[in-house]
Length: 197
Image: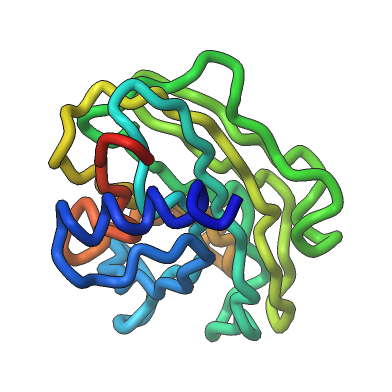
């Protein structure tokens, strides 16, 4: 059993050098440039993908939300309709019907109506609920599956391409905001393709 567990690690080391091939969650803070609001905004997530997969394999991606901290800007009443876009990585195919919210995750103020949906080449996390000024939230976790079409030696990079939010502010009403990561799309995790994994 121990030898079988070591095979994927050895395959990754031989193919990609002595980089750590360990699977596990990776916390990432994505810097954002937004069309409205203050500069220096960011989007935090924890991503879990396998370090290595075999050509033709199927694997799961999990994205966990991170507490946003207090959301408070002058004149802000609440935010709603948060959405993040995750393109299907090059060298993979999305497994139909696999995107879903992980039950019981995230904070209660954004769970109502939360969805993970596949939409024309990307998976979107959609949070329609309102979060009041002065509050924080943690997005629910979501998962989806990918089939590998990349050859041995390739790298599959999961990226965040865009984040949207609508803010309701005193006097002006709803303000639709688009946030772009830098660089765009922003790499958050890498899975290597190695035979025998």
